[in-house]
Image (cartoon, one colour):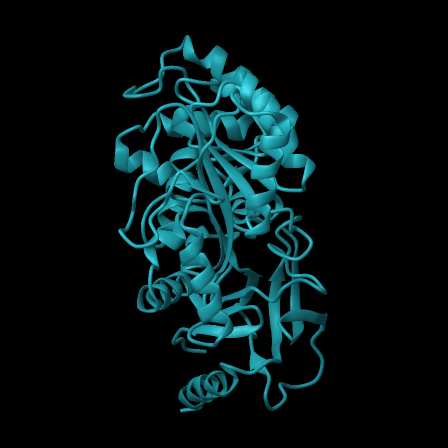
Amino acid sequence: MTKILTFFSFIFLCAQLLFAGDLVLYNGNIIDVRTGNIAYNQTIHIVDGRIKKISPSSGKLRQGQIDATGKYIVPGLIDSHTHYSNFCIDSIGADTMSQLYFRNGVTTVRDVGGNHLYIKEYNRLRADGAFSGPDIFYSSIWATGDFRMPEYHSAGSLQKDTPWSRIFSVKDSTDAAIEKAVLEAKEIGASGFKLYIHYSKEELDRLVPIIRKHGLRVWAHSAQVTGADALQTAKSGVQVMSHAYMIPKNYYPRKALADAEYAYLTDVLEAMKSHGVYLDATLALSHQSGTLFASDVIKEAYRIGVKLLVGTDLPDCQIHKEISFLSSECGISNLDLLRSATLYGAEVLGLQSSLGCITKGAEADILVLNSNPLDDITALQDICCTIANGEMVYVNNFAQ
């Protein structure tokens, strides 16, 4: 009977606090994703969407506090490769997508090619209280050559001359023209650039420094198809290379890697390591496309010490599928998987002091878990509650 009362008390409290501005998580075990250390029996005070104080628990649970005794607390997950905005083109779709992501513990997404008009509307609706949703950090997506951007929808479809979607020729442009286009993308709130396809080494060498000069991030496909190969991309100054399957030469429709491929692969991965380039692996996408040799690329990247990101490039929220594949096929440790899904995702956004961590002053994006993900990474799927920007946005039934 006591357990039943405790359970219903918790649910009632969560209902009371669902839209409250301040929260106190009492007596949880906080995992430091940087070190792997666990601070047991800690109480977290959240005020105005940020962590105000973390202190050892003392005394008894007070009225209004949330009892996290025996639970494990980690940062909210970051999906580092999605086209989120293209799947929430209206308020109903946005609300549905948001709840799906929150149920899976995702509080932040990196949108690497979507329609800014949908993102703008999404942010407006969130600000108006229509729904709660993950924070979106989005890119301006650029391509060159004969590539044409797809039109996802008839209304507000991607166009080649919008600030968030351009067919942009670097070789036919002056540096001043490049800078003007970069500033237009910055003006609409883009956090970075997705250099999508067909840029040569020489074009990357001109484009990347101008983007970085203005404090924006540079994300690119691992290879530029008719342009720069993976080794040239790794040395160009980009901060993220997407798709492990694109790293080997002549990667499509390759099914396996020959021994001779590993010399080039090692050169690329060593260059990524030395230049601080993250690998946005998208192994779940490789399962869907049949490019399963990607797991060998990822294992080699992990051995060399390249930082991996967790993202899927798939519709809906399939982050746990990606984590599962990285664990079972590539031997990524549970701690490094947790880092890839939190801290490293924050680092590529330049926000590691406020996202992907549980520290004083950080944004209160928090997962409360039933068990320790350092022991079993599937614990990330056993969520008691998801907190985003200090708001309890998802509460799962559980017994204490």
